[in-house]
Image 1 (tube, rainbow, N blue to C red):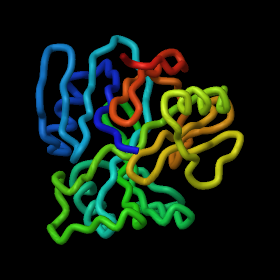
Image 2: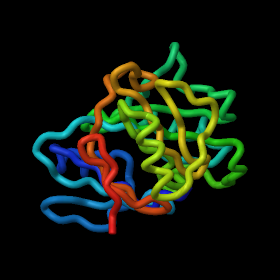
Image 3: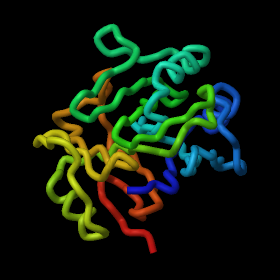
Image 4: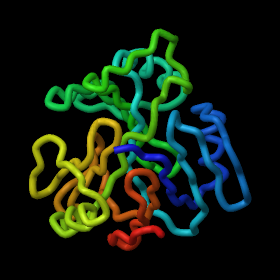
Length: 217
């Protein structure tokens, strides 16, 4: 599943612009008074201004051999969110390793190296090493209905071992992390899960508003 663009909302547009362009050094593609877009490997990440917003969880794929270099790079720029005292979370069932941190909206941002993608990079890790947007959280209290709505847009696979509270949909190139906000909290911080609005473009094109999926024309 390829994610071409994710559009998120922020009430701190200038602070987020400074964070992503000056702290993380992502490449700015365009900017207006109401939004800005960043190049994230093969994907675009856009932030639009909205007065009242709630945090998201999203992830970026990095090369399979770069989690230690990525950690060192991030440690120069942000505070890492550890899990059980470790800065790199090891997901053995997914054959991947992940690093987490907050941005200026307290969105939980993740760098994840997926070994099964077999994408390697001999260059020293930099912002240019990031491959794409890998995940976007999709909170819903109606897990089965939301899964059916996604399948109605285009058939989607379940990844890993789902539960009644958590289900990953898609593949290692791109995933929806579907969670029940009434019974689940975000890893690794146990932050509350919110049904935050967003727009996604790529293999799936829809806006997620008020917990509902609306197909884009």
